Length: 127
Image (cartoon, rainbow, N blue to C red; front, side, top):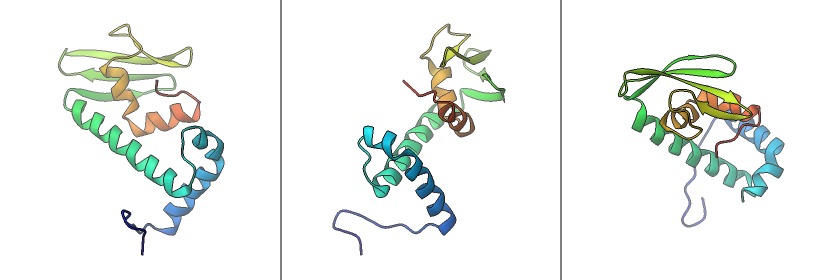
């Protein structure tokens, strides 16, 4: 029975083990973000994914992923009826269409799970 104000969930051992493995490897970095327990880590990840889904749902009808290469993501902007190229430049995402580091295209790229994982693994963080 969980403490008052908390709920419990059931996940497969495989999922649990994967989260535990990542948590153990990232403990120091997570502590700097105020995450000091495995439960806190899972909560942090759930909140992060909900935020990404919110961003994705907001822009998905307006922007579509066309392709993902090593250092660039090609998007179709259905509002501007243009192709947007977001590239990794000097360790940051940069939108060639908007000529900016912080625009809807860059935000959309952060919401694509496969891209986020690769960028995160390279040490490129959302600012």
